[in-house]
Amino acid sequence: MAKFRVNYMVDEGYYAVRAFDEDHSHQCANPRQAAFIRSHRNVDEAALGNTNTMTKVSIRPCHAFEYMVEQSGGGGYITVGFTRKDLYNKLDQQRRTTPFESDSEGALSYMSALAAKDPHFYCRFSVDDEDRLVNIFWRDGNSYVDYMCWGDVLVFDSTYNTNVYGRPLVLFVGSNNHRGSILFGVGILGDETADTYTWLLSTFLDSMNKGKKPTAVITDGAESMHIAIGRVMPKARHCLCSWHLSRNDHTNLNSKDAEKAFNWCMNKFQTVQHFEEMWEVMLLEFELRNHFWTTWMYGRRQLWAQAFFRDVHMAGMRSTQRSESMNNFVKDTLGAGKKKMVDIVPQMDRAHMRLRNNQVRDDFNTMNSFPVIETHLDDLEGHAASTYTYDVYK
Image 1 (tube, helix red, strand yellow):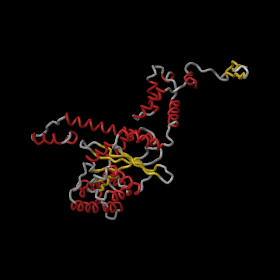
Image 2 (cartoon, rainbow, N blue to C red):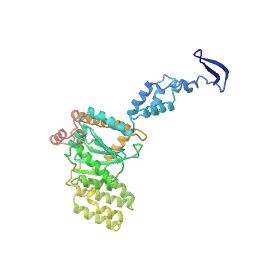
Image 3 (cartoon, rainbow, N blue to C red):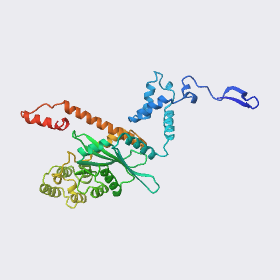
Image 4 (cartoon, rainbow, N blue to C red):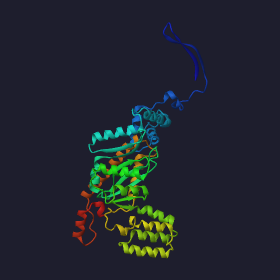
């Protein structure tokens, strides 16, 4: 940096250099270092636009930067025109100059735009005494149609570490006629109390015009969820997730054989009497009669044993693994890092688009595929193949 002094000449109306020292206070940057000089760095609108577009499809800004380095014509980092830190600073500046006063206001504004395009879009939220957003639920018009077609069995589960507020993101998940996962609605909650889940389930049913109610609801076993289901959907059968129970028996039982016997009781027996008989055999064989966990689980047997669900349509689902898979899908859509609500809402909108594209693909495969007949019962197998969708039949 060279030292010089400039004075403003008031009478003449111009600036004049009064002193100039040609000696620099530091070594001058060589050609390879010139790209780091502040005056040489600028994140232009094109680069910012590319980064914003990539962010919408879950590409992180650091990866977007590497892409732009790759596209810079062979000059690499020197010719891209800015550093990775510059890009992050520009994105932060963009967020801070948003016209919305708060994150929640931005999210609600985006939902208003969705509602303007979709007359059947539904959103409801609650606020606290200081008028701050606490709970919110939303779904689009297609979710209403999906629920009316395939809402007999509802998987109700929470996922975490998705937003900067540490609040649970609750997904209402079902299965369509291709055994593909579908999303009926999304909620973000302030806490996980029974009252909050009661509000969410009531709001979910209100969004469906209080019409169809699920015949069965699958959860991970949280007591607050169980209480809320009893309040809002008293006729729905509550089923505990078999996958979570299998993990619990591994923690609480003393041997692999005992775990195998418990899973046998949970999944295999078709009558209540048979279940009771084999449960007694398990208690005697593994000395579990006074075991706390098995005693507690026996008291809740109507929530998890297959024998008690013979009369209930479960759509091929007995666990929240479908929801766990949906959680992973959602986190993949949201991308790494914890998001603000104004980022989550459009990303969930994109998740809906991806799921529905999968359904269109499955419809196409069903219309244009016919399984190979593998038995001598040509007519019977051919009738089944024409009745069921391709994914269900195979």
